[in-house]
Length: 288
Length: 123
Image 1 (spheres, chains in turn green, orange):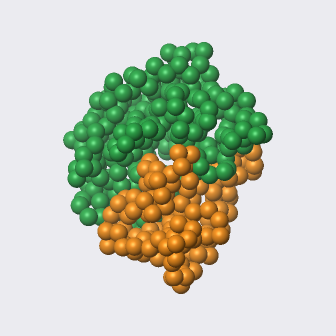
Image 2 (cartoon, chains in turn green, cyan):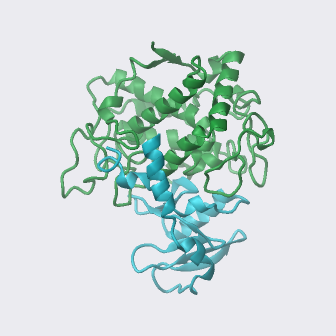
Image 3 (tube, one colour):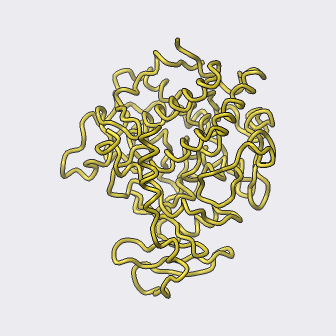
């Protein structure tokens, strides 16, 4: 049975509550923190001479599609009505959005330690103790919009430009790839200052706190951002039906990216699925 | 998730001994290996030269993993989106992201899974 992922703004009150309750239950059981650890463990920057799968690589999109599917499966084992909603940040652009209300994601962090003080993931609620993070606090942190030095979320026009890319990815298959849909959507810009952070990357930056680093999964908004990134990939695939995943074959010995990226038929840890197996979600879920 | 948990546990068990050694770190030598030491926004940041490669980073004597980017810069697990031109700049960027917090032990090493990823134990 194909299920539907919805815009967070279209969720009913009951749907919002059921999503949050399922996330809290996953946290209580300890399973949520395993997702945090997988993401920490799979961060490899592209100047390192080893395999990278999750970021700065062609498999950024299929790796995160599988990651979301695993998360969604765990949620649906708790409540079969739940799916991972998406945050269209080209429309929900401010910290006043319903997304950040106390019955859903909660609000920004306070000054100083950036501790989230409201909503289900506030430390004082007692149900969201951060276990694996790069800092020693056990509370969730955010700095929505970075008020001391404001930056804006990506715009529709910026997304439209990304959607016009005609090939999936190009050599050298990393954050310096000068064209291609994947690197543009991941958002590694060549500019200065905040211009360096585009699309997906910029959303992490806009949320701030835990979302800036390796332990970004501690903030449940991580999933909502990646659900929208996945929607954009899905839409791009539909608009460019002949543009398949690249590289189609592994970079050969002698190529600087040899054994450092996953080609179409190569397995991606920790699950062992290939990018080719992740290209269609039509039999599992759809976007509305 | 069982296989991944096993892999992660292995990688976490190899947390570097420098986590304890950091407190007795040798005096820095600013003339070699990119070593540095300074107070930045009230934090003691230090880069200790290694035999090869970039220096090892410490913030208030706690180790901070440093990774190289293809653009020639560096990132730390505190801020994955800012590639800094030097290890010193990467340490400062990490302090900016830290706020008032201290580094946890997980910041000393991360990204272990990918090392064994697609062609190794995960396959």
